[in-house]
Image (cartoon, rainbow over all chains, first blue to last red):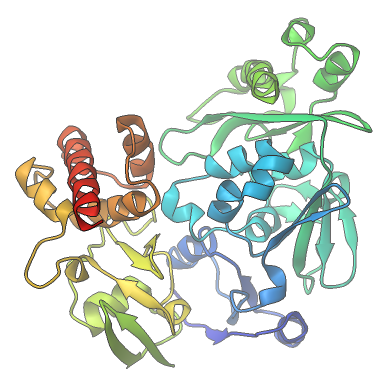
Length: 265
Length: 160
């Protein structure tokens, strides 16, 4: 690791001020991606701003029938939360499948979506549920506008995620075909039946999480596995790597969508 | 930067660079070499310790992040010269071959048994997702953890 300074703010305002005055600084959430990145010397921040001591970034609460989860809430907390299990059980189940227990004890919701790894789990839930990302600049960014590309989001350089609001779906489910070594999704599909219609978000398959509109339309007409039978996903814009070809991923999307549907009930 | 924490029940402090990993602080500053570094890429779990009672990879946490917190390493599990039931069970059931992954396996399993005193074999295997044994000795590791769970439940009942 290259050397860096370390700041430990105790309020969001202090963290935002530190970030604004140190343009080469980076925010540290759970560090389960960023610390390995630093160890490989793939990043050289001037300073780390540790968000772990900011109480206002933590916690799970019910709001407007849905859930509001603080950015620094860890995966293990979401997975074990009775409130999450009751209001959006698919979200608790997704959190339980991230990485391994030690990663879940440190990794956070805000860290995951700010990083926007193409194969991460949380972006699929945020996009699939039509969640809203709240920030230190008072913005409420719709999931459809938040994930803009590979490791890219709509966040400004000096903007901090404070919480994510998830509306309660009528039904939701997530199914992933994990890479057996990393547990990242080779393909992960989140399906949700919401008041505004069916939403289907796919992670792991392309450079950025995306909505599978063909599956959405099929499920809109009938919420059943059979409805997906006729859907063919075009592999043209999907990832090909040592783990799976684009054609294989295209096939997996419909298979995982069916499993997600089964999980949703 | 000056940091202080409790390690295996004792207050410790030291001067570290912000980039010092928790595992480096434990091994190099405190001489607690029971916590191993196996992969350096946050995958193998040899470096698992408890921070405030929860298992974490100490190679994927900065020492400054553990400032003010309570850390338990493999050296802190035995009490009054008596091995922890997990340590005993790994010994009795030969839950190790080369032994390199063992401290991480035991610290990870201890977290599982704190949360779930009666896990199924499947739950044990799923929990060990973050711990690699390159000798592939998982069978006896799982057996040892299930045996330890049983003896810890018996001890808890006896104490009631």
